[in-house]
Image 1 (cartoon, rainbow, N blue to C red):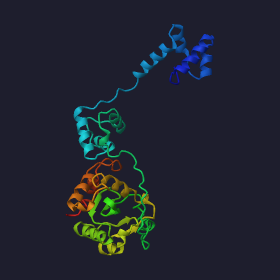
Image 2: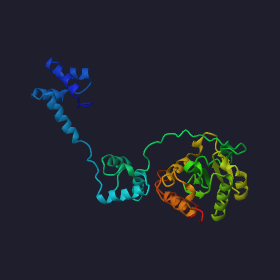
Image 3: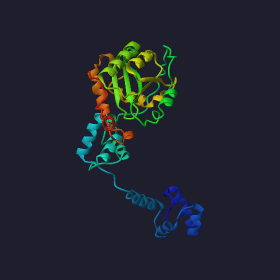
Image 4: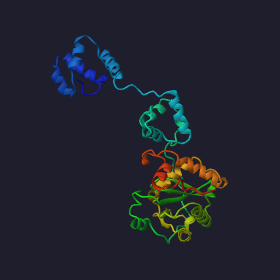
Length: 319
C-alpha cells in the first residue's frame, strides 16, 4: 500500500528505478513509499500517465458522498439566515431539537461555497478594518474597577451566575446619537435603551429601565470609561446596582458586550441617525437577537435560558 499521494514526479522516480532494474523493496526504502503495486502496473505495460489517471479515478470514488439537502430544508435555512441566524446556530439547534434532516456546520459552509446558499446571507463577512478613531473627551477617573467586581463577585468573571451585566453605548451617524446596550453575562440576554451621548440621558434611560422592569436581583453592571457614564454614582444610588468599569483600552474585559454590539449593528448601522428609533423599535431588535440560538448556550436562545433559570420572561423595558 502507498503511504503518500501519487504524483507525476513520484511516478517518474519510480520508473527510473524500474528501468534501472532496482528491486521494488530497495526502491521503497529510497523513496519511502510502497512500490509493489506500481511495479506490477509497469510490468503490465502501463505508462506513468495511465497509472496516474487510474489512481486519480479511484481516489475520486473514495470517502462519503457529499450531503445534499432537500429544497425545503435549503429554503428553511435561507429564511433563518435572512433573520440573522448563523450557520452554526442553525446546525446546533437542529441537533438540539433532533431534526430529521440535519448536517454539520462545516457541511453548511461547503454548501454555501458550492453556491446553493448565497454568502451574502451570512451574518459575518470578515473582520472590518479599525477606523483609527480615538476618544478625545477624556475619561472617568473616580471609579470602581473590574478587579473590585471580581473581588466582590468571584463567579461573575466566569459567567457562572446571573444578574451581572456588561454595558456600553453604540453611536450613530457623525457620533451625534447613541443607544445604551446591556447584556447579561450568563444568559447573553441583550437590552437596548434609547438615550444619547449625554451622561444625563444615559442616567435617565437606565433609571427608567429599572423602574419598568424587576431589577431587584441585578447585582452589577460593568461599563467602559466613556464620559457618558459619568453619572455612575447617581445610577448606583437610584437603582441599588453596583457599577464598575473596565480598564482603559481593554474592550476584551467586556468581550460579550462588544460582540453583542457587533451583531445589533446589522439593524442599527453606524451610518444612520439612531435617535429616530423608538424604544418599541429597539425592543423589537433586542427580541430578535434574544430569540436566536447561541452555541455558548448549548443552542438554546438567551430568552429560553433566562426563563429556565430565573423565571423572568425578559428584561426589556416597557415602551
